[in-house]
Length: 150
Image (cartoon, rainbow, N blue to C red; front, top):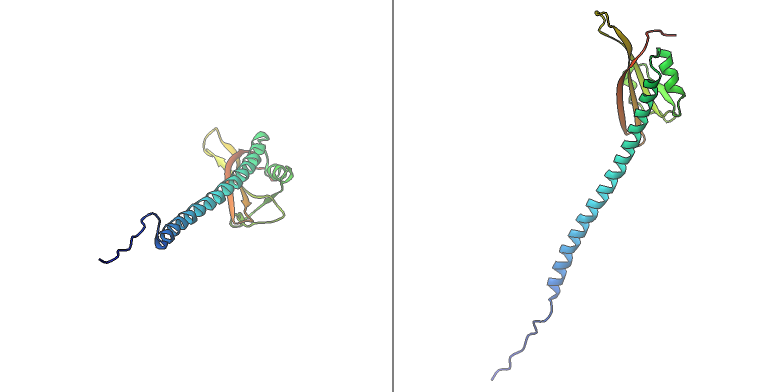
């Protein structure tokens, strides 16, 4: 009578363990990738919110002081807590300057020039850079004022 070997069915083979560990490793790598991407996006959105608040604060200062002249707007934006850089050419609005906090541009506008209720003012565009000038926030608003270039 031949002697039969008894095989134990109580454990896992080495190949089963290695396959399950490799599947678990792939899942962990995917989770960590998702986690770091989410963290980077949350930080970036926080910076974006801070910069948007800066631009909004500058516009609120102008709105609180209207009507303003051309030089009055330049003076207000140049002397508030943050330093603004007046950009004459719109093509240079998005050029990052490390010694200023934001760039701004002024366009004189006359609304309803042919009607009795003519409103003069300026379209003010404020660009606040962040991430070393790689990204920026642009905010544009109409500010009532006079076309007096003092």
